[in-house]
Length: 212
Picture 1 (tube, rainbow, N blue to C red):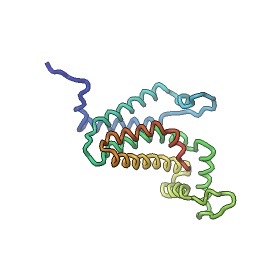
Picture 2: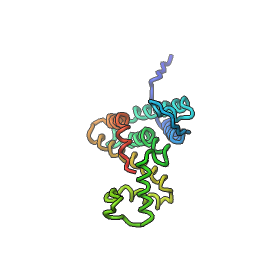
Picture 3: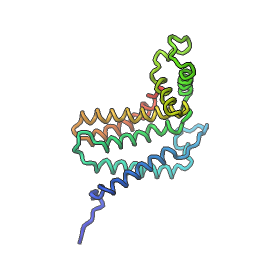
Picture 4: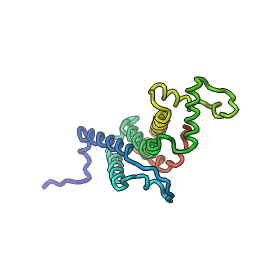
């Protein structure tokens, strides 16, 4: 009689692992474009009320989270930098942080609209105003210039360029953070876990890091 353990994860390799990655990417895309609605009603916890079908979103989210953990724990921890861990870190950050940028393409606050106005002004006049009496933030025009460049290169609107900028910044920030943890810790699994915990604990803080 053959004993089969449900905890045997040796099957997660080769074509099976590739299929899990494909499924994870598909679920990530579905979660990012999941239908939401803007509401003006007050709730102590606002987030659950924006989803048109919260149970379905919750089911997809937990399947997505299970796949990330399943792929993460079955990675062989032998490389100097594990590219699978890095990719999982990017995907995780895109949902936990980038999702809120994606569902608010016109900005999530008045500050966002004000900042995009700065970008529009740069594109209109074609130069950086120095010592402008009303636009003091132009003394530090780096972020506004980057969004303007995105808009010109991709031919996207300022709103779409802002979202691209924020999503790119999110992924890039956590790539560097993972690299820092990887070189600091001996176990790459601990580096991945450290970044994930930081994302979970610091979602509110990191959501305030955007300039545009």
